[in-house]
Length: 264
Image (cartoon, rainbow, N blue to C red; front, top):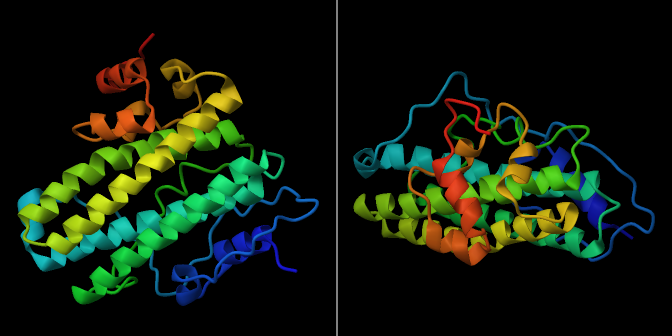
């Protein structure tokens, strides 16, 4: 009988683009005696070519150009792919965690795969199929490491980057609307709404693993060069973050964090 762990491993390591973008549904059972297994580099199909150099930020007005809009959506789809992979990675990396936590990882992984599908279809309507733009595995460079703990994982990906997605998602929903692409705006709004639960999952389990939602405790779980400023948008989506359960004191500290000096 196949297991969730085997499914996660196959999804992580495949070099088939179609298998990466549309894996089969996962089995329903975990291994009877799961073992820690680390996959430190995801399989990358030949269609996905790494970007060389830094990509410039996109201004709202530029998104009226279909090519620039498609390139941005391509980046967002790759973000979803990395998130799906990293939640699968955590399934293999933390076999000793409670089953409800691992079930939650699997559920979020499947959400991210579904989000990829939303972007994928729209990219094809824009004439920019996934794989036609270079990619950057930015999240893979910052989330996993060989000695990561479950608390570190949810601090980085759940509280940090999923929280930032709430900020960025609201902003780009407005940008896509202004650019005259209501379908892109609709997709972005849906994904932002659904990722409230992802951030809430991170907050909940960080509290379980550490006993607190304190900002300074969370900050200590971020590895250099990752800082709190990298986990917020230019304007914070306080409504969505509040619904996810971020304490007000945490939000106040995050909003005022300044990377130019070491804060006490």
